[in-house]
Length: 230
Ligand SMILES: Nc1ncnc2c1ncn2[C@@H]1O[C@H](COP(=O)(O)OP(=O)(O)OP(=O)(O)O)[C@@H](O)[C@H]1O
Ligand SMILES: [Mg+2]
Image 1 (cartoon, helix red, strand yellow):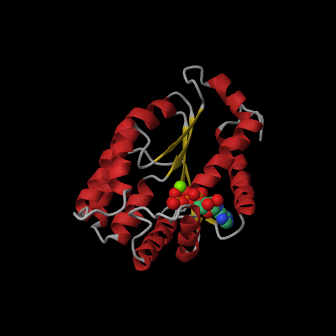
Image 2: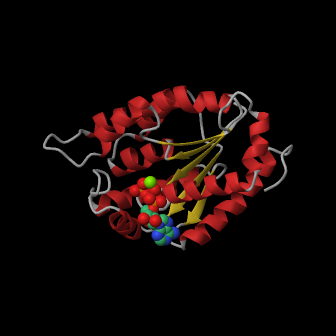
Image 3: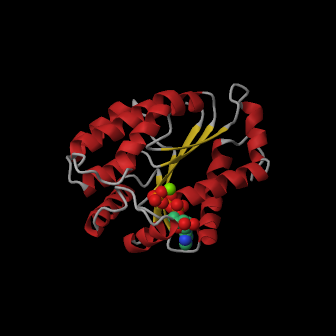
């Protein structure tokens, strides 16, 4: 894969979506994307902004099933796990791999670490089973850089609630569930320091973005030395 996959992770309300939007605006306004475009003639746009679940047509249905507020028939933990895996398999094959193979850059809202944190640490499903499922769903694709937007669970959930009063199925899970998820992200940081960077997301949106900018500038310069620095 000649392209690069950058993932934004973390509990609800950490600022993943906001920071992806800011990064996109910055890369575009700086002219850097225009330079990248010259090297990726096969792609209509060298930057792909996407998310899990929900990046593909199938994924949009799965996202609805996964995040709609709880119904009378509770979604079983193992069914939930496999719906996320189905979303990921479709996303990787139809969107991520072709874009990366053509040399493009991807900013992805959640990826494999979320499944380990939410379904593994949060729901308590077997971690090695989840790793196998992640492997099957991704065909071995891993992120080149993952920003873990680390914010205290209660702050993150408070922000999510401010944003939209009706919480989705995940957001309305118990505080202790989200705390286990948070613990999962901490464990992942220790296991994968080569690809995961922790950002203190309790800071203002602007300060968080400045830190992301600094790290992204460094990495993009390493990865694309032929392009002018940001
Ligand atoms: N650093 C910050 N400080 C204060 N508020 C923030 C910060 N970052 C984002 N917000 C606000 O918090 C809310 C949640 O942010 P955002 O939607 O980007 O988070 P998210 O990580 O994508 O959440 P989710 O996991 O629910 O998709 C938004 O209303 C956003 O404007
Ligand atoms: Mg979001």
